[in-house]
Image 1 (cartoon, rainbow, N blue to C red):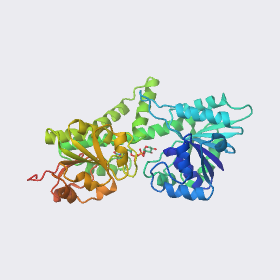
Image 2 (cartoon, rainbow, N blue to C red):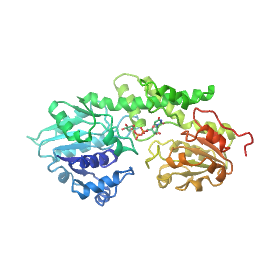
Image 3 (cartoon, rainbow, N blue to C red):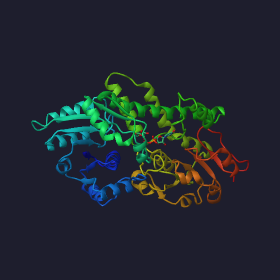
Image 4 (cartoon, helix red, strand yellow):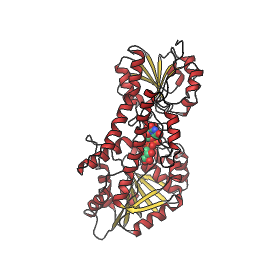
Length: 439
Ligand code: UDX
């Protein structure tokens, strides 16, 4: 099948590469010639484990192409995926201008029947609106069909998720389009759920909102555990064994970030509001998450009073491990607050260190060597549970820091390990570890 994918951002690039991998001939179209040039040279424009190798393999086998020319990319495509961004407007709603622009471009260029598949996360009703927008611009005699095929990939494990997803949602207006898409995606071997356009769009928002709710719920339980002397990890384990609850997304921490949960929860609240419905539960989920981003600052101030002039090592900038993505990362909140309180901040990240200066508006230095960050620090703050941080022997803090005091926003070490290493250790929803004689 000949397929075009518009947008080579995170979703578009992974979708294009994966569709080529299962045997389709795919042309990815992007308006940015620099991106297209890099991609044509086999250089992925995002960091995602396993993506580069898969991309190169399919380019070499002449199944995957990149262009900035819509006409060329759309030439004989039977299916066109729209995978452009839907960033957040200032009022929290989804900005649909990129989707609209891409749809208009397709409508104006296409000279044969196509199925337009919307991968971008869009508010309920958008697919139909996009179809009408395209119909008004399409050449006489050209026929389009529309499908909603939302994306459930997690950054950092996108390739794995593509081939091992729990389900694929296909929303259409007719069975023929649903069957065509089911056939295209059949080699992924993932259960396919065929539904209507509106429900498909809602499944994406509802899924992300529910997962965000699980995280904020366990974070509230964690905050309560701290007050009552319980351990949130024990609580999550005990809860998660009930299959009606499930153990996933019950890791307490400094809150969720990334390109999806914050944006999609806000958009759903906004969408509900537009229809005179106040989504109180989701509003609280968002509020809890915002509070959680600030939680470690309160703990730090309670411990030190003032941190003016203290050297702090911030470990991890990315919103989660295995990505260089800083979007909505708690680091964007923590580092400016630490700097504003007079701390001398040095941030560490194995992949995203270079992005610190550009993304974080605060006086701070950045390194991709953890030892450089910890050397002589008065305290450390863990933002991202990178494997190298989790694997690090807690003794390292004692060896390198001026004072081995660690505020762990991701519960990277067991309480026993922290105690054994003689760390002063504050984590989320678990008892504090304070050695009898703090250095
Ligand atoms: C998410 C959804 O999982 C995916 O289906 C959707 O398509 C896009 O949004 P992603 O943002 O890549 O994917 O990351 P995910 O692994 O879901 O984590 C999101 C955030 O939640 C991260 O900041 C992570 O640290 C946090 N999180 C996750 C927790 O704090 N606790 C958990 O138990 C799980």
